[in-house]
Image (cartoon, rainbow, N blue to C red; front, side):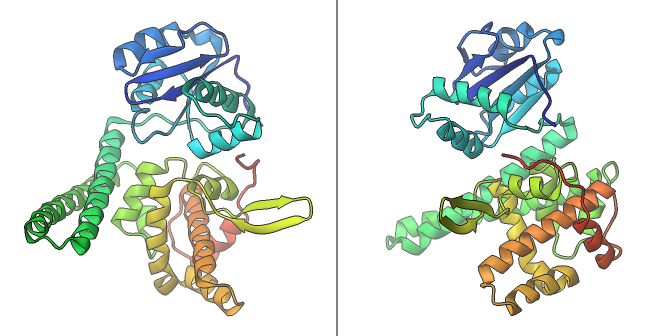
Length: 331
């Protein structure tokens, strides 16, 4: 059941400014994206008794100051999926896109759609998240440079690129060591680490990304977690037209590591291997079978975290996953 708030504030975030749409009309429509402005001109003007919800979109990092300030002020906040908000806006006839319209539709999204609050993170979790995201950045840079190297014919440019690649590989190695140490330290206070590592196919990178980028793991039902990551087949039917279901949207960082983990699991994890092989035997193309296996692995991990149980008995875990409690799906 959707929780009702007396006041909802939608925020469109840019690198240097934020546009605010306040259902109560009490806050200025545009503020600098600085910790001082956000704290003094936004959250200090929100009273505890007002039962206020703040909603913004995930913008690749520009939303961090707002999230931190909201948690410091004890104000509930939801970091929404930009694609879901955009689809919501289109569904309400808003095809144009401006900062002012975006802030308004983000607020309407928070009012009308069942959302999930973004939980606060400890100092250790913030440091962990920052390290995991830095690894993703370095990995992306490395991939870009390797692509450039394969296309360049100039010797000087090629040498420059090779030096950059060498430096990035050293950074990646250093980050991997740091993440492994942080996982070891985190395992002393968070049982989720050992639960994830108990699953064949889940290594340090997958475990770290799930813990950092998917804090909702274990808190949602199977349909919700699959939609959140972007591995749920969404209906595409209207009138007499009934097109194939497609997966889209979701958290790309999580989906990327889940893909690699599933590739390993289809060979070495007995439950996932059997599931994947059965789909192939039924004539499913490999891509569809792999996506279905990604969803299967994710929902099993989700239920294991929810129950606080490691992968001791794959058959039992698989059956428990099938009986996971249902709840309204995300829109």
